[in-house]
Image (cartoon, rainbow, N blue to C red; front, top):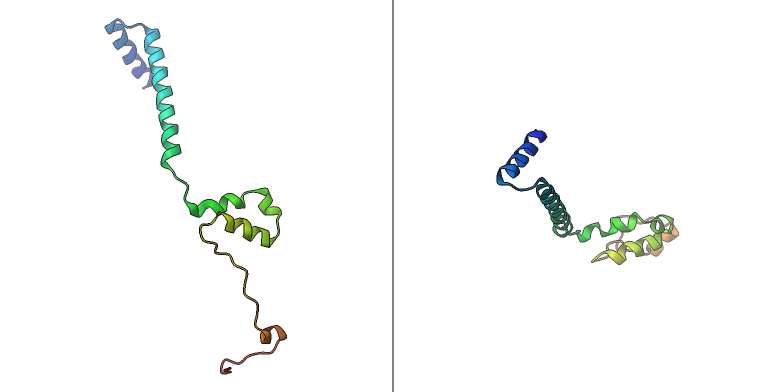
Length: 106
């Protein structure tokens, strides 16, 4: 198949009186242009969603070596709205170990 396509280009070039060097250089320039166009298209057509920003942070070695609080700060710094919050302090009765019944009202 490849040989047939190349034979077609060569036969057309010979029929039109164009040199084979010109045909070869033209095809190489065309290939380079298409490559540049493809790279430009892939760079501009795929915007990175903001939701993936934390994954970029998680892949860093600094994230893996840091403590839990630092990790939360690193993740919150790249998010539009921080979602990881420090849990609220437990009520005094729960901290003392006193069980509360569901019917108990204050």
